Length: 236
Image 1 (cartoon, rainbow, N blue to C red):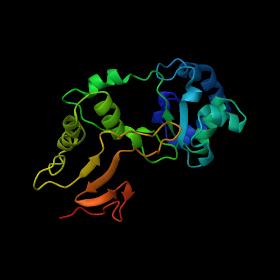
Image 2 (image 1 turned 120 degrees about the vertical axis):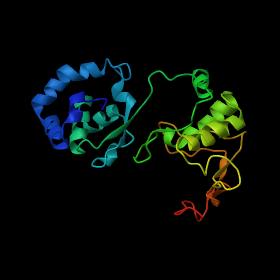
Image 3 (image 1 turned 90 degrees about the vertical axis):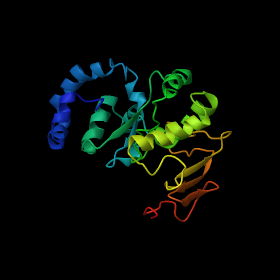
Image 4 (image 1 turned 135 degrees about the vertical axis):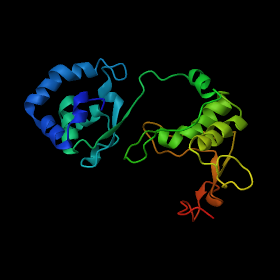
């Protein structure tokens, strides 16, 4: 999406792949389009090192490499490497984009501390080298923004990360601890909870959340998954 002209989104996969394999189309993209990519505020001239290949099923050896590294592996330049990757995988390629100008904890804490803030993540888990937010979002909200940043207190964290999301999605039997509600519980250690996932190690597990109960079933005890780690049915 970020590295192709928007009109490609309206094409069928077959048409798009055929175009990307055409030398004349490549020459035009190189001359007219990729200079614009380098001017995008979200990308800039460092885009070859900022985009890390997360999923490319036909070329799994590329996962975890930046486009710059993939070009070096192929022995070509980054534009041809990118287009070859898209053709080989019939566009089924996802990438993790590093943030050029990351906002400070203090800045984000002002947003997160708003009474209407509802915690969540758009992390995509299905890939070989996913975004670290998939594994680290909630631990970061608890450690960095609750304990360290003061965006809200621990009761506020429970409200923003549990009660408000449940209410927003109409899950009326979840989100708070009360008689008749589903027993979805996480035991958090306020002193140690922290995210560990990074762009280099995106699936590193968080720490400080060692016991989790889903629907009254213990799925994590002492940081060890239980026999019912993924309950298949809700208790009646």
